[in-house]
Amino acid sequence: MSRHILIASKDKRIGELAKEAVQSLDYNVVVASDLSLALYLTNKNMPDLIVTDEELIGGSGFDLLSELQTDEELGVIPILFMTGKGGNGNKAAIETRAQELGASKVITHPASIDELFLELMPHLKLDGKAPKQRPEYSPE
Image: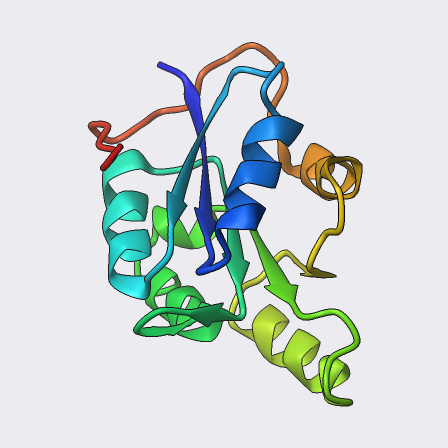
């Protein structure tokens, strides 16, 4: 079984950046633009890493974090929480809230493939062992 990264973002560019960033590794990148699809795909695919944007269709990255923490299996998945560049002055509050809800790290939206790759690398499993997975499903 291949490994999975779930990108939860209404910005399709983030998903494309992630796909390009890990194309040489054994990872399948699945993108969900809305909260309900992100939750469904997380339950079905049990991703190795989740990257969620602060804003999703039908909810937020905070909502996704809250929902994932209610499931013992899903609550241990590393989650990178993305927030907008520059922010509106409350980036520290966003970071604190995201980490309280279980985010592994809070990052600003990446501008390039290299930037995203550097953020993803510490969270990727490259030891050659495929993790335990739930039955796979992808809308693509």
